[in-house]
Length: 98
Image (cartoon, rainbow, N blue to C red; front, side, top):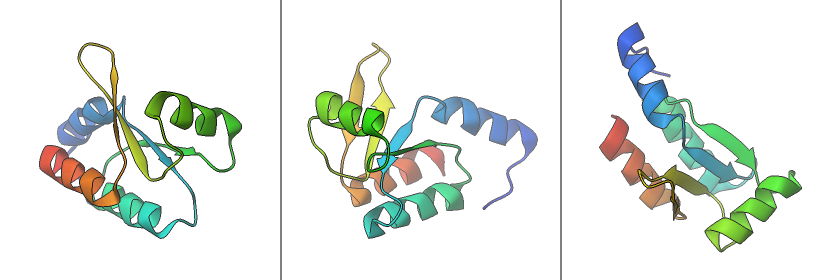
């Protein structure tokens, strides 16, 4: 995990505070996505969509699919945007936080 300066880490933490990653522990695409999160030094809440019925239900009802990994982005207007493909999630994270 990269070591960011205190101010930069605080900035990243604030920028990613509303991000949620719905995932399964053993899913290879989820593992790949979590590795990118660690590599970039991001603190993103992980939600187990297999073991926790609340997160599974939220993923299906609000995101529209029971597919992981899925990154929920909170938009400025309060709505959520749901990114479903690991490559798309990784591209988004690298573009915005590296």
